[in-house]
Image 1 (spheres, rainbow, N blue to C red):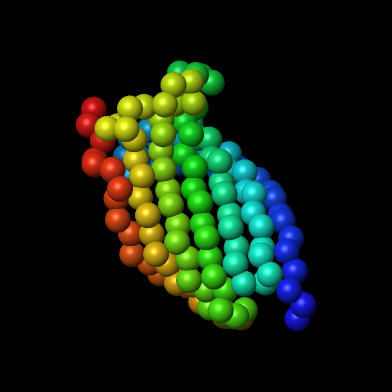
Image 2: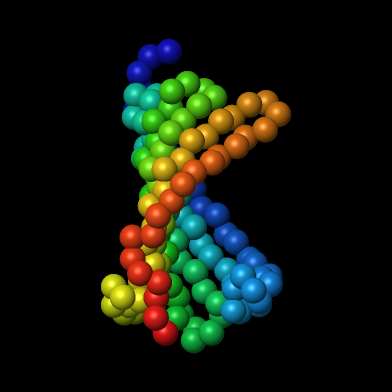
Length: 131
């Protein structure tokens, strides 16, 4: 297979009904743009500039919660990746670092005709936010 580079994009809309032990608000939503590039059939770089809401405070309470993934694809079935997840707080004014959320994960993916599995281990980069 020739080595090529190509980009891709998309968007995912999520509407959630949550249990209170998982999320304080019963209903939340997010818009997850997807922007990525496949580099020479081996490396994927994907960025999701996610915006989410718990439907309080209108547009002024939209939060910026981006995610990034860099993956190396050994073949069509196996990949290893580094992933980063963040919550900067409201778009109108990001929270101070002490209230932000950042974590990094190392993952391994296996895809087959029957099942796709992603497993990983992660670590928080910031302290638990204080209210």
